[in-house]
Image 1 (cartoon, rainbow, N blue to C red):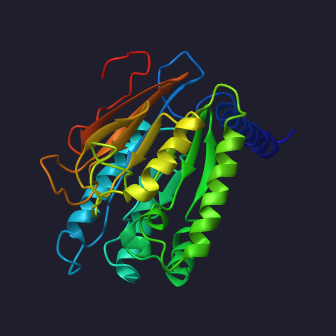
Image 2 (tube, helix red, strand yellow):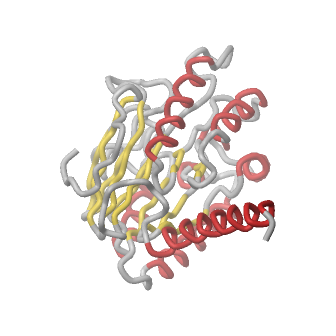
Length: 303
């Protein structure tokens, strides 16, 4: 055997082993995250919200958003979570090509072995969704609602703008409703699974019966869907939109509203949510961009 053939076979075997390792971790673990947990069903993921390129300077520039999102993506590359989900308002001005390009450029720096899941926000599809605005979003970022699987996490991504106001897109809202009910039913038949919902606009910020407003889903639809989630065992819903952190509970469901990667509108500085999953136990903590840990200790129940 020549030295060239030996080297070629060696590197092929190394590459083959690398692919096999990733496949095994996805099928039997909670994604391919780097951590020191001994339990195959222990993992963590990162939730971000509202990078919203252009918001700091009213669409005149996006330098601050660039710095913040690059910090967040760099942290994700260092920590290597099972996946990253960005809960909406990827950009500030719908259709702005420069903002779209900058979001995609930095998102493209994420290690390709870490899945990235985009969630549509109202600034991405409009406060009043139309079939045209949805078509443009799908062309730029992909599906506006879908599901994914990562180990013992079953993620459901929703287009919350269709719940907020679907008056101009009633057919699309009905399609999402039908899909959601079917997906929840299918997920309920999977053993030892954590069904987690990701969306942009929270169903509520602190109280499930709070008054209607810009920062929540209208009451006329809110209770119907919260009861639906309860029926199918959903325990966690993660959202953004508020630009600050907030928590609320309804019939055992925790509504987690996460502060922004981009511009804050409250006391919480820009940051990310890190979510630990171990069997059916889920814990989460918000970290400012300058306080993100160097490693995630999954064997340690405290943060």
